[in-house]
Image (cartoon, rainbow, N blue to C red; front, side, top):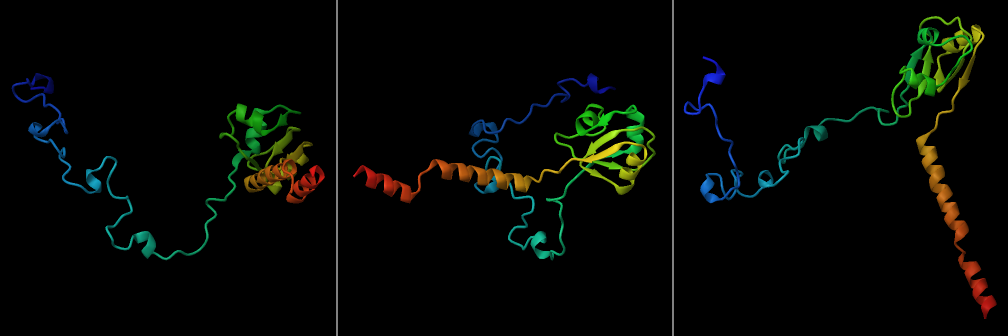
Length: 186
């Protein structure tokens, strides 16, 4: 016997439970959710870390040390062997070209060049960071290693915030200027 051989009479098809369709439906009124409380609400349910009044585990455990997980600077790694394989002598290597060749990913990738492999071609390499040995090998092959300055998002935000304040300050007259203009009108 196969599953496809089971007929409707034998219980091969079971209707799904239609909740909240009136009191005579079998699961009417509260639709099988009981009365009140967070479990009866739409989108309800306890917080995943809730322990019902008991002190939660993340508050019971001691916190020690420091993690720079939120502030770290991540780099996409490119090795010299990949530069040797993908570029011709005299080419310029920058993040845009590396992204087109799919050697790096991400919306705004930061590139670090490492010294795995060898380089015999004269390349102009632009990256956000170089290992000391990679820089030495690039310059040893007759190429140049240019450092792209990292953009610090905190400094950019601060500069933007301060520039908008200064623009507002330039456009608005000060109290003293207002008093002088009123005095001139009188």
